[in-house]
Amino acid sequence: GRSSVSPGLGFDGAVFTLDDGAQEWALAKAHVACADAQVHLVCSWLFRTHIAMEPMAVAMRRTMSTMHPVYKLLRPYLKYLTPASIENRKQLVEVSGILQSVLAVNSQVDKLCKEEYKRWVIQETGLPFELEARGFTGNEMLDEYPYRDDGKLIWQAMFDYVGAYLKLYYKEDYEVLEDAELKAWWLEVTGQGFPGYNWGDLIELDDVPELQFALTTIMWTCGPQSSALTRSMYDGYAFPPNRPVQLRGKPHRKGAIGLGSFTPFLQRMPDKGTSAVMAGWAKVMSESSGIGQPLLGPQKEEWVTDTSAVTKYREFQKALEEAQRLIDLRNEHRSEPYPYMEPGKITCGVMS
Figure 1 (cartoon, one colour):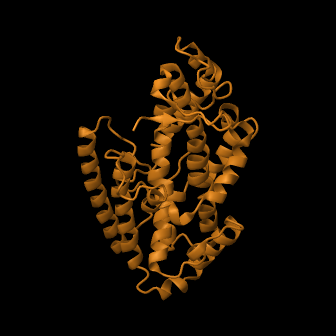
Figure 2: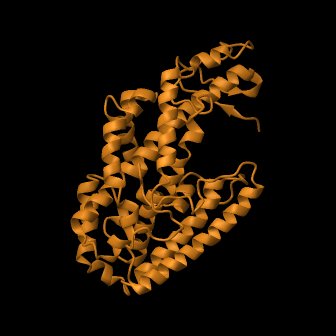
């Protein structure tokens, strides 16, 4: 079928296609891309990888000993999350912040986060479940989707590592229930970190599989997903027509632009000041995501020290090396290499 987009409601249900001319088609796509940019930056990046994960980090430091095995496992993923979130609130979300000054949602950043909170389901946050929730069940006609294909390799390696690691400390399910520090951590997360949220079957961590899922989800969100979202920012936002963060004027009606020059399209793009601020911020964010502990690589700090746990960590590194090898092969044959899910370039935790 032919490609088509609708830039918004309230304009006679207009649907634009290639047959409407290059100018109208380009501007219609720009409106869709602009809306997607709001979701990408506010919902996916700010809310899911920062706001939703911050209670995990705060509660962990309040309830767990630094010697607890779960603390050791999560530490590199949550270490910088709280200070990063504090800086983001100061520099990005407040009235004079960058996001409010450059995004089309403007002062509605906080409102959009609250709306995302209503939609957020932790059971659909882990990669396979997130893909399924978005309709990627394995039967979709989409041969090349690097985030899906490369991400599955990393998710599986992480999931297997967490399972093997937990078996060293929890031989039976009842040991999870009897772990006072673990119970206090999750109680604070569910009760104080997310008031009024419906946790479903994860209101308590009853057994090892539930704990494995919860920990892998946190590590995935703060590691590979956060890194992929952040490292791609400059590539995505440096050139405004590619993905404008705001557009001047309302969505156009069919036939309003005609077949003339691209001047009307360019006039809708963000002004120079907005574009410069967004490009500069995206550049800083893309580069800052690579300064932490790499997912694939030696530990910069020895947080996993037990001999048996170190062995599991090395097995995890071998699985990531194999994932890196397969991703390198895929990138050689892709129409455009996808570097954002390479284990050697992914940062373990949220850095900015």
